[in-house]
Length: 455
Image (cartoon, rainbow, N blue to C red):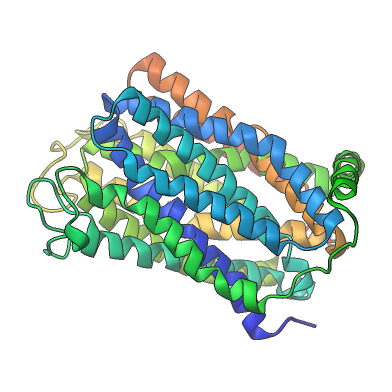
């Protein structure tokens, strides 16, 4: 039995409500703004941003499994989702306070607020994911997960379009991408259109989380005091880790997820920062780039759900990782004046948007990344939901978050180290290949679900 349609819509709208944080703050607007306008130079900005991402990953490695198990012990998931979503919004709103060429204190504020908001957004997603097995039967988990990712991408697309058309203006022209003066008197020179994405993220979550609250059913309360739930939850963490070690399918999948999720963390955090630093892209180029990626991401997530249900999530994951590894090589081969490592081209900055061949190739590779990231992540949570008992989903999704974050600090940390060591942004993406390849090798031995052969 599936939950009513409005319950499923409410669940999927969680992704819509939180995606602007990842789209606007992490990837396409505030992250590049921080690197290019707040930090002293792009290299140090990329290093600082990656270190903040690393700190967030380390915090999630500690918190995710414990809180997931506590939520299972206590019953309902929605209160946790709402609490961490509110924390995400509050931390993101602080980014408004960070102007261009900010003082060291405000730089630190930006990095801390970004890290706290990242932790809160990911934890809110952990509890939302844990509701999946109670909403639809196993054979529909792929469609539900894919629909959630597609809804999230659509939310990111709409929010980014609003920012680019109405709020973020070029400091040189004072006009937005739509040729308008920014709303609310936002000052383009002070980059208020870029900074407003923090408060917008908070408002967006507050509005669009309402259907989840009203229409999506939650687990009943356990009837135990909070202290007892905490003790039980901590005990369940130890038991969950022991269970994962005894279950070869789950254990292998969690190790695989740990590897390739590290690559995705770097890819999402680094993509537009890398393009902005290498090609000098402004908010306009980055915004159009983001819109196109979100369009392909939405289509990819919608297509990936039915494919997942037809051939199984493992095949979707393996195919996505293989192509992402090739895309990473393609990104590494680009420079301002060359593609494929040695093929010389005209320098970046030609007439019109993406006027040089390297920029156009980077754009094409970005579209491929967008089309694959949604199915990869949707099939990851679909595969785990097929492997674990529905009543224990919270603790297992907490462990999934742990596997995705246990070494999530390592990828950004290595990017920061390589960038600082070689003093070039091109050193950053080199760490991606190892994560994707190791993940693919491990996930090959994982079945598509209980009772499904791995062969």
